[in-house]
Length: 389
Ligand SMILES: Cc1ncc(COP(=O)(O)O)c(C=O)c1O
Image 1 (cartoon, rainbow, N blue to C red):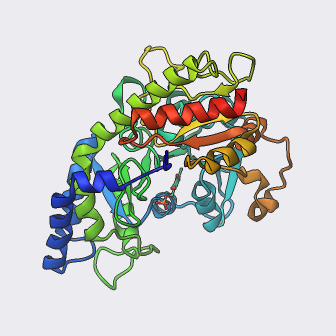
Image 2: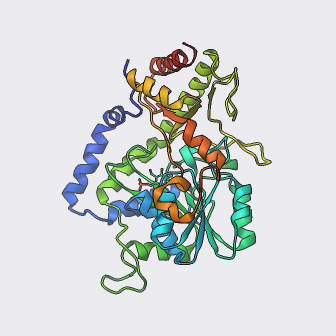
């Protein structure tokens, strides 16, 4: 049996008529960049996310870069980021000649640890950039508290987390000062190429984001500030508009698939509980877990952009699954502090133990909405075979 890590074709076929019509509508209009399709999309995202401003941009990376530009991050500034994330989270800070201040993660959520954030605040700190990794919210209450006490901004990297909710149903990306989303095709809501979104409830920031999206001017050829080309195409907007009404249904399917994995791993004797952080005889595979450390008792709404397991002989398991035609991927094999391009930050192995453990043991297995029960059973059966023989 073949089980790809992600298969986008069933989704396309289920919406083929509407998607094809949307693409043709843009072709007919010959209006390719920004314009009415993008404006409608932005309004629909405001409604979906319950935020005041949603601004379509060229990618998730550009959303982060534009957000930092909107709050005037530059040389001498420090931005606190997790050391374990997709490269863009730290890359955009360095591109503005500011310093990414790397921080360790919480071992259960894979998200930045607020206690560690506290230790990193200096006079130069201008922003904290929590990432809602794999589709689960970072622990936002303490992060917002730290930011408030120190008068610094919070830019949420919600690239993997459209529709994820923090406690009490608040959508991630609308909690900090600016939220950043990606519509890379493998995200829960994917376009037909690169695309992204920035969100804010602050009118002044929205103004800056809008003008910096188009080279820093309200009027063509008149530039108030330095911006860039961070525009989204009408074609992407048209596709996203067709898909957005289906997003929650797809995320629910991913959540149901996650529940089934929990059941299967337990039955296979590989993981008695999910959310464990240490391997033992009853938990030979560590499973992810939606958590809430706050006091409301409401769990984070995890949308499982990825389902990340942890295994001790991870590299051998990866090879075994690949040989058995089961899609898998290591996110992220090298934390930022061990990346060649960040050698100037002067870190060494051991500086961020939880991130290093995550890099050394984590493995994504298929979780996409259309995955069948039989495919999930096969995945767990093969993992069992590898671990228990
Ligand atoms: C956490 C995170 N941040 C930023 C990005 C960048 O998004 P994009 O690929 O749309 O530029 C991604 C996308 O992979 C991501 O996963």
